Amino acid sequence: MLTMISIQVYNGKGRPMGEFQTSIEAVQLWLANPENDRDDRLVSARDLVDPERQNKNYDWDLWVKACEIEEDLRRAF
Figure 1 (cartoon, helix red, strand yellow):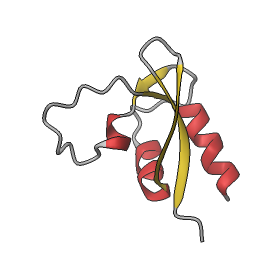
Figure 2 (cartoon, one colour):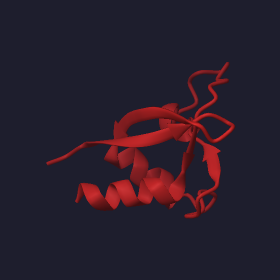
Figure 3 (tube, helix red, strand yellow):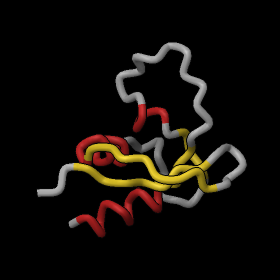
Figure 4 (cartoon, helix red, strand yellow):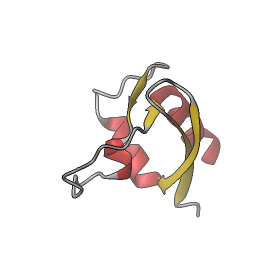
């Protein structure tokens, strides 16, 4: 069974930066958060790349679009 998924990440200006691999479980938890609307606006990827917020100096310019993540998850199944 597939346990990892690739998601498109962007910089703060909306320019594609490549893909980031994370667990399907992390994506499902992220999508369950009502703050992560299902539209195409950019939202911080922090909760996907540092879900436990262990990196106190987090300043990565990584953004995602919830609608794309939802579609990626749908295609994975």
